[in-house]
Image (cartoon, rainbow, N blue to C red):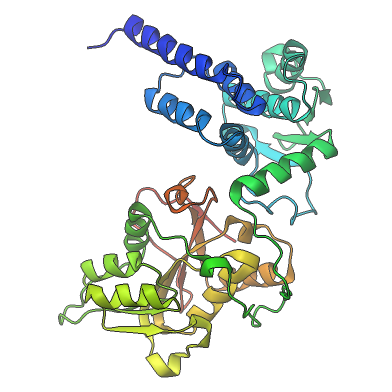
Length: 405
C-alpha cells in the first residue's frame, strides 16, 4: 500500500517535470501561466494521468494547454462557455449566477480564483498580478466567517450575493472578455463564414449548402455506446428487430453499434467513399448515397429509432434533427449529438427549436468534455433525447445529467 509520503513525493516529481518543460523558451507564455494556475488552484491534486496529459499538451502547439484550461474552468463557471457562441448569442444575461447551496465554499473560491488568474493572463499581467489582494476580496464575498460585504470587487470580478442566496458575478473588463471569447472560438473550432450562406431563422427552412468536409467528425466508440444505451434498442417479443436509421452515417459507428444491439439498420451518407465502406461492411439493410435533406420518409418508410451525429456548422444540427423527426414512427425515439450552443443561442431558429423540443418533453444531457478530441475537435457536445409522441424521456443509465430546454 502506498503511503501519503510516497504519494506526496511522486506528486513533487511530476510537478518538477512539468515545471522544467514549462520553463523551456519555446513554451508559450499562456501555457506557462496555465501550469502556474493549475498548481496554485489544486496544490494537493494527486493525479499522474492528468500530469501526463499536461506534459503532452505542453509539447503540442503553442497555447493548447492554456486554451483547454480556460475552456474547462469557464465552463464550470457558466454553461454558456461550453460552446464558442453560447455567451455571445445570449446577450440578454451578462451576469453569472451560481446557487451557493450547490457548490462548496472551497470550490467556489477555487473557481473564482482560476477565473481571476485567467483574466490576468489575458491582460498580460500574470507575473505582476496581486493575487493576495484579489484572493482576500473573494474570500469576503464567499466565506461567511470572513465577513460578507455587499459589492465585493476583485481585480477582474464583481461578486455579490443577493437575497436569493446565489452568487452574482460580473466581469469588469469587457475588452478582456471579448479576447477570452475569441480564445474559446479558436479552441472549439468556430466555423468560418461561408461564402454565399445566409443563416435563416425559419425552423423549417434548412441551410442547404454542405458544411466543410460534410461536417464529418466520426463518433468515438464510447460516445456511440452511450447513444445506443439511450436509444432503448431491443428485440420485440415476437422476435422482429426495430427499424433504425442513421442519417449522415459517415463511418457508420452508430449504425454498427445498433446492429450489434439487434436492430435492422438503414444508412444515408453523401460521401461516395464512405458509402462504399458501409456497403463493404455487409451489416446494413439499405445504404443510400444522398444528402439526407434530399431524402423523404415517403421513400424510406418510418423508423422506430433515429440515431445521429449531424453536422453542426451554422445551426445545421437543428436543420438535420428537424428533418429526421419526420422519419420517426408515432412512437419512435430520436437520439442525436448536438452543439451545446443550441441551449443558449438567441436566434429565432434556436429559440423556436427549444420550444419545439420542450413541447415534446425532450431532454438534453451533457456528453463528457472533449468527447470528440480524437476525431479532431475540442468542441463540447450534448445529446438530445426525444420521443415523437411527446412522452417523458426515461433512461436507466446512471450517468444521465438531463437539462430541460
